[in-house]
Image (tube, rainbow, N blue to C red; front, top):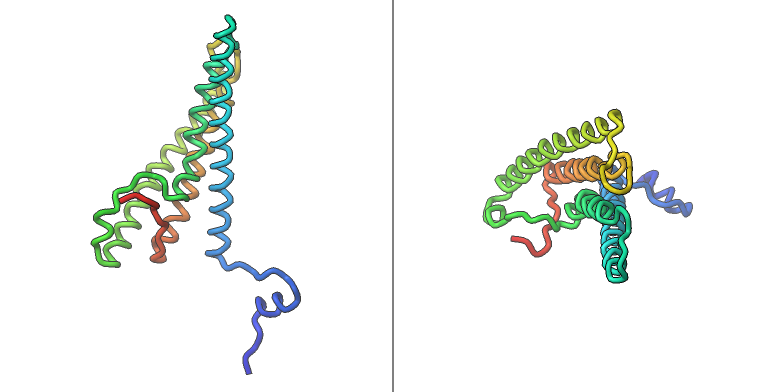
Length: 188
């Protein structure tokens, strides 16, 4: 006589089924990717709005103080904040021509090695972006444009995006070690 598992009894009582570790990781990575994509998109909209407002202001003979600085910071934030989202969506450029012809074991080894290499590089970059922002904060570094702003504020998107990318690469590594691969849509 089969015994009911915890999941079966939970489902029978109307409770949501429990997630295993891989499902939880997958949902967490999806949430981090969605949040980073949303923040990157908002930054891009801010860039567009600032540039458009500055164009209109110049047409009527005036300027918006600091608009160029804020547009540049917003564009940088777009790039860094969207990194985790683009990796999760498979939108980073990868050359997979070699991977497609390799046997399964060799492909897995290449996936793991390339992901470890990316993880090391991104971890290094994330650490140094964090140190860079910390130095700006401790040194009370200020912008030199028309609007004075502590520089750590616009710089904060760099370590946030890089650490988000690091988390995505960790997830990718776990999947590659298990023989599961994230898809790259339209790249080859």
